[in-house]
Image (cartoon, rainbow, N blue to C red):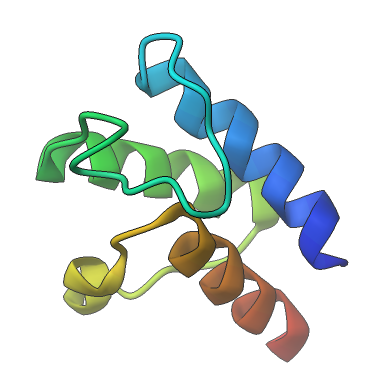
Length: 80
């Protein structure tokens, strides 16, 4: 799966939680999208189901931007 395809899916899901804010690859999840740790966890659970992957919960602190999430999904889907 290409980065652009992954981004489109992540963008759609993140936008649902970001209360109408514009979402780009550089969007800061906590500062710009208004996420807290529970929101990030909820988004990642949705993405796991969507992409049929398992995101390690011990790495949640590394997800600062949308791009961090997209690249992680790309890496995890490539392993399958």
